[in-house]
Length: 553
Image 1 (cartoon, rainbow, N blue to C red):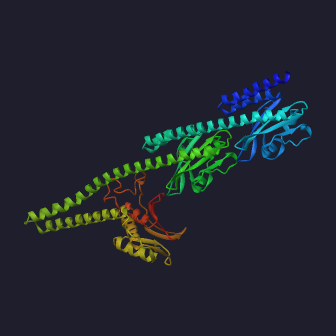
Image 2 (image 1 turned 90 degrees about the vertical axis):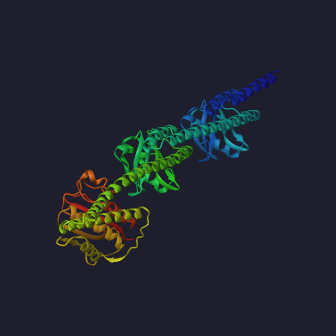
Image 3 (image 1 turned 90 degrees about the horizontal axis):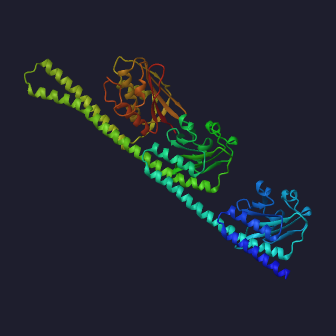
């Protein structure tokens, strides 16, 4: 009769284990409820569950009753070693009748005074996903019935754990989709880049549960990443942080075009001091890719040490894909607006510039045709005016044609070997009026590969401006340095006013009350860039100095 009652009690307790396994979808709640019932079922002092970490092939203490330190200390046991490791590796129950004389890796077992242990594998589809073990504080010989009972409970626990994991995975997938959708909605809602980033970054910070979020965009001219927007680390934008591609944290992300994680910022190689000043401890960064090319970097950071997981990286990459496309879309929109405004301005100014000489030529011809009795002196003066205005009109049309050909990439550059000083002297002789002296600081033996047309267009324009607006002495210098031919034209005039410098190379940019259409420098720079080089203005204490830079590789 007593055995019958005992069996009934065990069945009741087993049913409680099954009920607990079915009642919870959250893994932590499930394990907490299960272990209490299993400890009662086996009439033991401790009960613990260790789950397999497949990435390290270790068992990780996940929940315990009577042995809570195992979880608090983050105990990890390699599969195949120690008590729990043997259970997982063999996929069979293991009994330790005497813990004091057994092979156990976990010192907490002895520290707690556990004398005997019984462990069973948690099996799903024949594979061990963890270990369930119970212990007692007095010697006990666990029986075959104990083993069967614990394995029965373990089987139900394993299925419940797998069910809870599946539920968690589904929920996380749903949350990820919701997060990505929130970012996508923001990406589609804004065309202005600054407004777009202002909305996106707080959402991304929330999605990744981070403290900081920043976007750096590539400046292709300098091959640097420039801080464009940030939340939680606004100083990065305020100080206009620039990071060379390949250097530091963000530079590595852009150069390698793959995610980079810094578990400990204090011990990592970072170029940006603001990261440490802000107190960031861990970071994760991913490239912003468009057609496989990095246009920037997106990174998040936390103010406490955190190991960013594979899921974190995948989520940030998903977000970055949307962000990159949105940024490209916003940049194209801004470029379209800029070009539309530039085109409208260009047409208006070009029409105005053409109208003046055209009207003068027409006026002269109309006067000559309609007044046969003009004096020879007045007729000669009118003809001279017509010639001058006709030349101005011809020159302006030629410049506009040059601009259109350069914009359409219709200019073919053909670098050939030249004697630099000889060519520069010829250009100066054809450009500078007689009586104006030009000093040449050019080695006679200097030779280079350059397109004569490019040199003529650029240097003649610079010399014309120096004669027209500068003061002597006029100096033309040249050298080969850093695998580039560098030709400079300088004068001792008053230089370019600061308010004009920012738009110096834009079409029709010129100082007030000066003659000329303001196309020369725009055309000169376009020719230089068509040659793979550049034309730059170099401010100095006095005078004006422009430098033409052409590659020699």
